[in-house]
Length: 82
Picture (cartoon, rainbow, N blue to C red):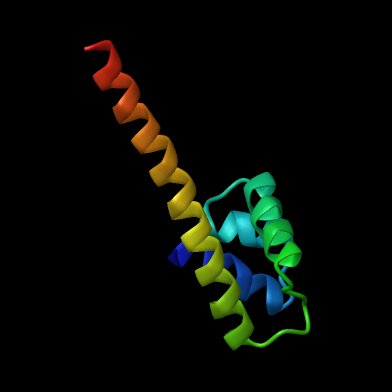
């Protein structure tokens, strides 16, 4: 996702969480959550843009998979009750 990678690019460049949030229109807590998840996957302030691409791609896939699971579960639930 473009938003995830842009947040991470700006964080690696040294911008503060509040600056990133304000400039992209997210809450500070959303930016903080995304940065913490990226750190859990191995991203640090010393990393290059290649590492940001790798981590943001991994986070996008994980996020997509998570949403697909819930959408599938919702569809199955609807079919059970209809």
